[in-house]
Length: 126
Image 1 (tube, helix red, strand yellow):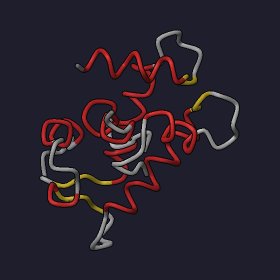
Image 2: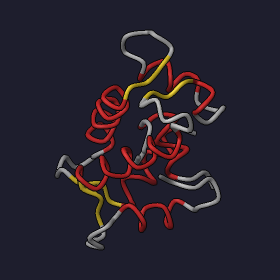
Image 3: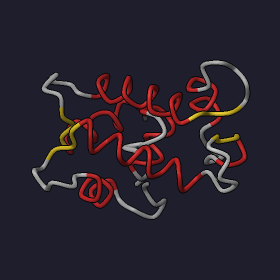
Image 4: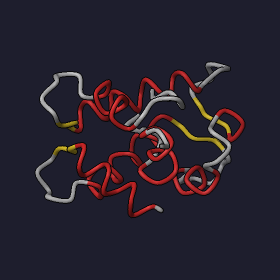
């Protein structure tokens, strides 16, 4: 099963939900991002994961992500997040894109993502 990070990058954003390792299951990634262990990921937890993952991916520490620094399976998501079309993602672009995707994934509009909502979103991507 693809990690929540892969899904986040592909459609929900650079998230994903912010850093998620490729070998993690959705459940493992969700549990790691759910810092307060309440069974839901709030927007603060989500953004923190996005910021953390951005830092992990930014190997040259220039505070920008090039296409070479992002997962290869996500060129369309990269292009969509690159609002100024400069071929680079700033942290602001990454977070902004992820926040939009977070709320689009929040099926019941309660301001948090449950594991069920994440699974539902993944199914919609298939």
